[in-house]
Picture 1: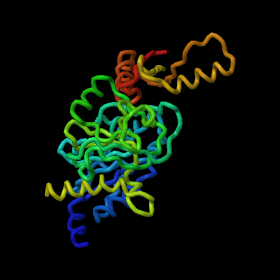
Picture 2: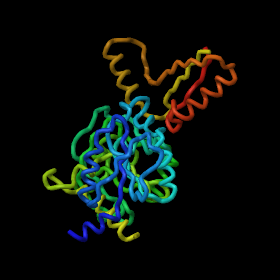
Picture 3: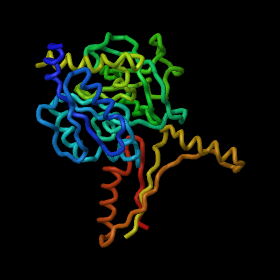
Picture 4: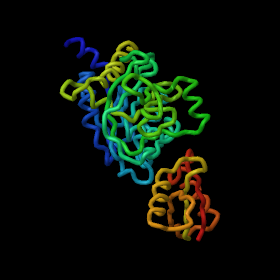
Length: 243
Length: 79
């Protein structure tokens, strides 16, 4: 356990809290569990992140009741300027579900998340194929590995113009894709109609990940599955090596 | 001054909400409807500014927040 503690010191995370967010405690619990370090909860009106922050997390929920467009109002809140600066300096940023929508709306990630193609709110486990393992957000997995994690969203249908999708594919910036339990990609497994079955992408520099599924909800045996843990363990490992 | 900003989805962007509304109208028996695209309307008041400044402010508002120009177009009208 001493080892876990030592590594824990190396991952100081900050969870952003916007009005209407409801998954911030799940996220904080997982971060504590995996890194050993209690994350700072940072209110959206703050203009700075805590000193020494290694990872900023935008959790899921319904910030501002999804008014105007999902994530649109949260993306313009004061703390996002600090996040932009943090990301520009190479800091790691993870947005899950509404967090992904906020990252797209803030311009930190390209594209937009539209209403699910079949219009229904989708709330069940899905399979994701991990497309590569050489990134901070996927090093806890093997390339091609299939993981099972829950989704809970009405607007997770990733859309972008053709050039953007081509660029994402060309630069291998799609890290997670919806797939069958065996890892096949196709319309029947693409739960929300997302372009190229995209579940999660990174920015050009590779330090900002947005994803619709909730890896933080599959991290302990009591949850019935621990497949999501690799993402967080990988981040801890990445930071430990970088230190 | 009163103004209206209308935000609509760009051509080619799938509009599942519009499709659902279209389906509902057809099931209600409303005749002659070929397709429905939905959007948003913002009625905005700008007291004490001239037309040029109002238009500039509204364009700024639309670019910064009211529309997501990745998928949406907008139109500004002074009414």
